[in-house]
Length: 459
Image (cartoon, rainbow, N blue to C red; front, side, top):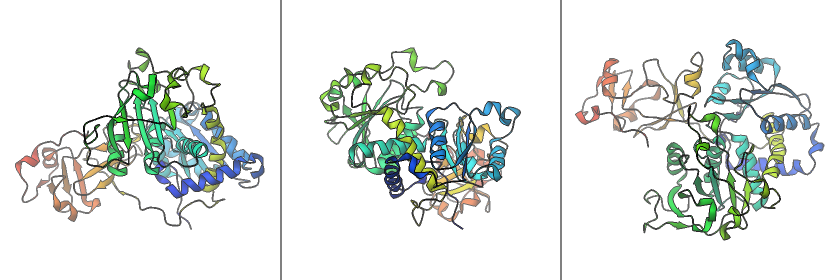
């Protein structure tokens, strides 16, 4: 029996799989009504703990166009969740015999990963907090692919709220994997989170350098511009090229605009307290933007003016429409009706379950903090030496100051070569040496007193 596949992160699909989905979506788009026998009898459950219009309706439309049926809980506040039922229990019930596939949107980061742990059917992430939105990413990539015929080497501007937009985070990772270049023009104070930039650098070889905003016109008038490119040498210093000069952006293929994600701001914080970046015909008049298509995941507020709707460069409504054939291809693939998956999926990162005495994910919006009954702390090991650990649910990096071995009851520094001998299931993660010793671990032979100092914060 084939291994159950889920789409929790854009990382769950290889580049070849994404391209196969694009080809199938293009074939489907030629006649949306010609596929009504492909998934006949299949049932999709859409579980939405947050509001949605386009994502939910496009999934439901895609299912019905494939000949399947839909059961929906469009507002989980009116479901058993209001009575205190956990996400894990809901997923176990709905995936038991109610549905053949689950589409989930949830405000907690990592919720889709938790659902995949408990579901007996494929889970597709329709957005989890400010973490990821992989199907929106696929729709966006598909639109770029349709417009330009390729993704490698494209210069794509990411503008607006880059801090809280889960769409931006997934999109940035995927574009980097395809070899595109990213031009970041954030609203002031809403830059890409450091952990996103860190991952782009370390996993995808993307280098951030300071860029010149002169050729980007009014779009960049109030923001620093950062150019993220896999084409630059990895040893470049942060934000500058080897000569310390800003990179000049000559030509842009696409501008991806985002709204302020006010529903995710801390109490009292809002980008609306200052003038929010707005894109319009005047803004897009710069020479470097004359051929750039304008994209937006929608809904929009005022960040794209209505006067731009008649501009042929504005493809955001086409982008939304293209979500249906993409999601039709996705549903058919995860229901086993078309073959787009690689014969050998890539090996997963090492994951281990934490004990109650260990470090927890520090992110308050992580599902491991909001659903403690079923979401035990889980870590994924990115690197053994030096040790790098992230939350297996929300991907937030966890700063470990001391690593215990439960077999020897000794603790090691995170950069100790001895960690190569410690199996992941034997490890215990602590904030610092004192915490490890408070839990009954003693220093491993050969440690230095400097290793007792707490580790610096993650940048």
